Length: 361
Image (tube, rainbow, N blue to C red; front, side):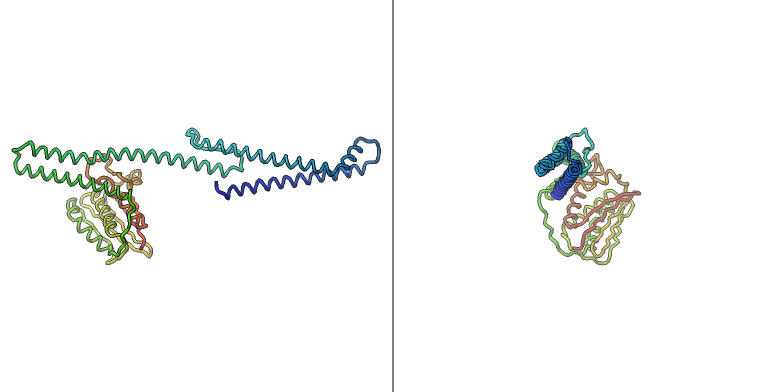
């Protein structure tokens, strides 16, 4: 609980005690004055009321002290009892925080409204963390399955074709060359997956230091699209750049190349054939924006919100090479955030759009 809240509640309790004490003192003094008035106004006579009031008047100092003491003790007792009752209610409510059968904690005293809100928020946070822990455990289990599948598939092919070449001595040179090409392709695929796993481990376990230098981001994008020409040609894709003639930024060049490579590779993998991939570069006084847009199957919202998670793939069956091990976008997000920027994704009307926004360093 914040000290400000405790101080406020302490002040309120103290003010209540003081107000009750003042009110009680006033009533007591009024009663004494009334008794004295009545005693003085009554004629002398052997009236029992007269003797009683006269006796009170003679012992007035003692009576005031006794009644003040009793009254103050009663006021303090009542206030402390209420405080302890509230404390018991709060203690009971705290015990209900982990009770799954109770959705909402309700404290009856209106003065405990703020504590009630804090306890309910704490309960919601605990439930959220429990769900997050279960999801993390599930992702870990999925990772083991995915890792075994992604590594085993190309490895099985490598072993199978090498065994075939070893056992079948009479295979023609043409078939031998074909099998060797397939084996090499599977081995390279295996190496690519292992490198991706090492890459994400490096990002998770070590503190990455940015090596900042100046670079013309326009030239970087032009070089990237040139290197991707063979991949673009395979799917009959075009890549259109919409950039200024020159734009220098400060960044870690190698890491930024990795981000741009991952995004363009992702666009190629998930583009319809015979379509155009657009890369738009915009600048403002504070930020630089790079937008990758391609035509492809609309990504459902329930998948879009997980797209930057490690080992997440749109192809949940993991039976194709599309999307690699599901690490590219996760690594890209980590790099952009290291640069103090953001990366977002949206998809609608068979469009897939990724936007990078980084500050001018």
